[in-house]
Structures are given as structure tokens and as C-alpha cells.
Image (cartoon, rainbow, N blue to C red; front, side, top):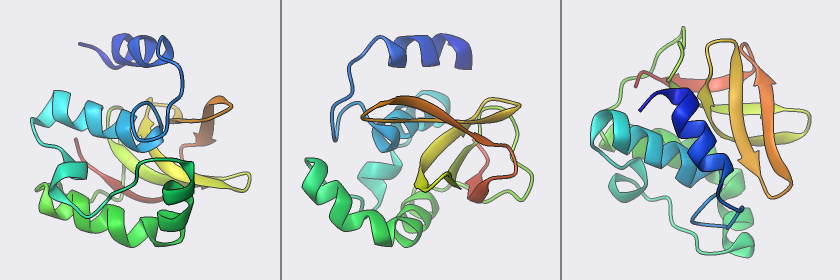
Length: 124
């Protein structure tokens, strides 16, 4: 499955916390490409919006641990298909590099961040 096909499939699903949100979208992509689940490997646990908002301040630490436990290697130069933690326009979250920008989703839809707008990225 290409990244474009994956994103089209993701867009067909309505947003749902802990199912069809930014974290789980990236987790599905990593499982598809690498056969491992960072969410299962790491300590990223939430079930609804309230619990997601509680872990948000710790997301950089949690995501780094989860990716490391899943065996994923950080990259300073992300490419198409890599996963990263992005911050842009007052928002932050896991995202997938499209080749030109980062793509992620929130309850109000998909959004993009500039390619340089990442805090950390991992090769997928």
C-alpha cells in the first residue's frame, strides 16, 4: 500500500480518540511498513479525549520511548513515509512525512505542518 492509498483509507474513517486519531494513524502506518506497533511497545495509553489531553504534555518523552522500544531509529532528515512529532500553529502531535510536509489529523480534520516543523522524527 502506498502512502497515498493509506492516507485515503484513513480519511475515509471518522475521527475517534484512541482509534482514528493522529497517534493511531501513525501506529497503523508503522505496523504496515515495519510490522511493529509503537503504541503496544511503549507507554502510550489513552482511551478518550480527556486521557489524551492528560498525556499530551509528556508526548515527546512517551513517543520517544515507544519508538525506541519498537526498534525505530531517529533521523535528522526525515523522508516520505517517516514518522515524526510535529508542532505547528499551536498544535502538536504524531505525523507522517508526505515528502513535502507532515500530515496528521485532529478532531477537526487533517492538517499539515511544514517539513521543517518537526521536533523529532524516525525512519520508517
